[in-house]
Image 1 (cartoon, rainbow, N blue to C red):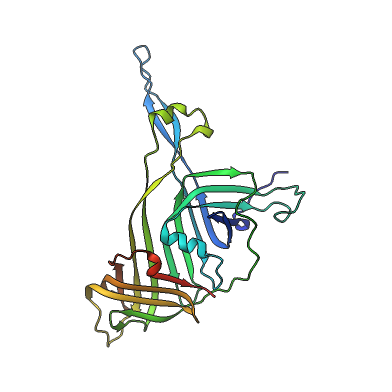
Image 2 (tube, one colour; image 1 turned 30 degrees about the vertical axis):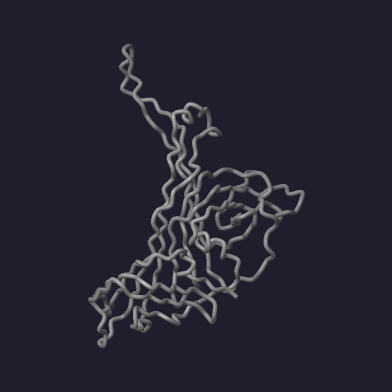
Length: 304
């Protein structure tokens, strides 16, 4: 009988610095495509209008996933890799008939490996009625079926997941407190990742099958862009609508108790525009302009 895989059952493990972490994801997508290059096949003796093709190069693999920023430390590895753009390996498995590690297993796990993953974009989802969540997307050098034991030691000991339904304890722009009548807050980080050229004549000549396909191996990181928006209801007392500033501080704390996110930005530019919906509103759109030595000094994720 055929055995099929269902995405809702997958388990995700990240291996970084030879240590394994198990990630509880709410959404995940991944895949990889190959490039086909066509060429004319006309000759003096055959004027065919058809073209031949060759496939010898893979595009970078792609992935996207969402996970909750819980009070426990279990998901910090991906939060940190989002800020520092360091690479890691990801293993996506669909459990077979028996729990992991139980032998003999008549239906072994199906495991996919994403090699040298790097996170390119991400959104911090901050909503007063939902738990804090981080959605990320990125690329990797290669996606393949994996049949060995997942490295990095054993899985971490099982722990509970305590969700953080945030309150905006601090939301200021410069000296102005803008935390009242807030509808929504978004924060997005973009990492400019450019893969180094990996298609060469020598490499193409060596490609004879899928196993010898040319895959990307290294990348160069360019600029990082941190920005977001603050949507509010427009009160009659508001004096900030239809304004802008090129050099002001932004402080945003969203959490529960001492756990949660803290954005401490000394310099940002912003514009504030009016929105005429069913209820008039105003929307700040901001972008960080300071140059921190590391984003970890600007964005803090505090766990229990």
